[in-house]
Image (tube, rainbow, N blue to C red):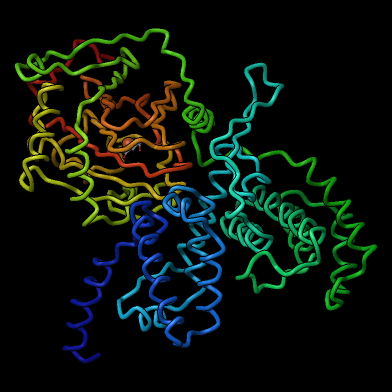
Length: 532
Ligand SMILES: O=C(O)CCC(=O)C(=O)O
Ligand SMILES: [Fe+2]
């Protein structure tokens, strides 16, 4: 290769990789909120264009109609905060081309991609699964959590969001979601989404063999295809010879529009039996099943006070003496976990969110070699804010310093890591300290303390849970949780394992401040025993 071309490639290629942020509409609700506004403006412009006698493609016409039919004006505000409405928004917009939208509006229009649609469908799968949502209700736009009562027998239902007839999932949606579940190797969940598809098809047939309720549905789904897909997925979980025979027989008649009616009925019955005997697989990639139970508690919000609950005012410095901070001890001892109330103002929150929003990128996780990578175990976007950028940020760092008594100046404290989660966004159980495999990150010593501010309430879900301590901390705006990542001996505080639960409804904002061991040797002295 020519030397100059090689040099250009060396320079341009890493730059292309470096600027890749992997941010999409799916990874931040704040980004989705902007899309809702952009959509409203775009539809208004296109309608004006049509009224003025202008021409649009049939896709665009269909899109504008589906927008009109989809939402009553009052509901539009909350599109980005509701998983089904957000899915429908992304689906609607992914059916039109950005070049036409751009031509009609005269503006650069960034539209959702196939990845956005895939990830929003995945969010629905995860939310249904983690929160045990009633699937039929979910397909009708209602969010209803089913939980087992303490005696383990009765079922209780908790309505999180009432039915919304304008936000229903049709058979083509539930089928697509099932396909996404298969691609993500979530075969157990896929079975139930395909089964729901068959139910939705039967309902549609009953209502009248009708004008489709889904203007954008052009997939022409056949019952036979859905049944075969369902059978294939069931077989992936548990092989069944009779299902195999029935499928082979039907497969031979696949070209016949409706297949053989008797064969279809026979296969349906076999599948019903097979499905009723399936048991939910234990997720091996999640270390503690406890995570999901604790997340559900976060939605119920009827959290009984902790048996050892103590509250006091922090007066650790002249600042906190003059302006005491309300502190609730959530876990005494090892590791210490405390909650501070009203520790940041609405005005500060707004400033921090605005500053972070302008620079947000998809949040990475730390790979085993210490590098950054994107993972489906963390769906959010991040913006880092330094003390030198604004007095609000510097003031907040000082507050953390006064409350903790630790030096949080860079590099002993990291910049604020501000996060906005995507719909259904979460951070699976993890620890914040660097593990033995990540020595590259230890240049400024280990992280010893995490100070996490809640910059928003969350309508449902999104609690922080401590999986080994059985502790659920719901996200409450203006509060903050502090926990120790390391013991004073600098041993790992393994029980600090925690997670950010999936956001069921709403937009979750947090800001993390991590405080390091270097620079704090005298303020965080060793104890007398390793377990201290
Ligand atoms: O979102 C949360 O509640 C937890 C976030 C977290 O653990 C982290 O960012 O390290
Ligand atoms: Fe964390």
